[in-house]
Amino acid sequence: MSRPSEDALALHARECEACHADAPPLAQLHALLAAGAVEPDATRLSERTVTRLLPELQRRAQAVFWRRFLRVLAAALLPLPVVLAADVWLLGWLYQLAAAWLPPSLATYIVVSYAVSALAVIGVTYASIPLLIARPIQAREPAL
Picture 1 (cartoon, one colour):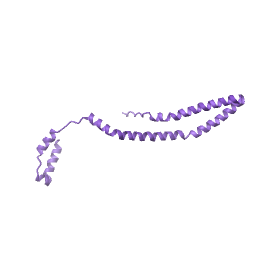
Picture 2 (cartoon, helix red, strand yellow):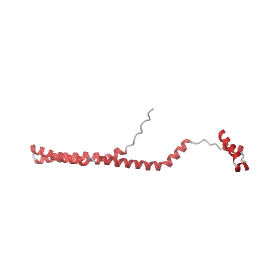
Picture 3 (spheres, helix red, strand yellow):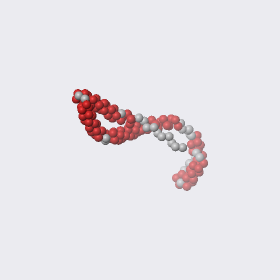
Picture 4 (tube, helix red, strand yellow):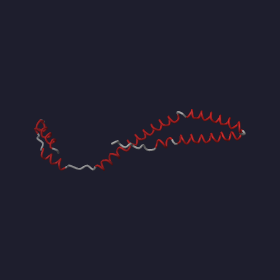
């Protein structure tokens, strides 16, 4: 024990009636406490702490992931009706332009090919949302 705590213990023993009646053997207590000093193993304590906290950390990480996922998905789905309406309008305009210069079957082929490729691009874009959200966030380096 350090010197200030010894003084505090001796002071308490002198002022407390119960402790004054049964005077504690301060020298023996001090010797026992000094002999029982153990150096803590920081690595083992850290491992045990992380092991105990891991379920809570995983629960919080899941909650953060789902909040991010829903926020990004809502932001991505918000302009989707406008994109689809513009695409339908563009497909109609493209068909009219192609039908004016080409046979109707070839114009239909061009429009359907464009629609399928646009649908694939939109599908890949929306399918990549969970992958982009699931990537780990890198912590910024602290400024010195």
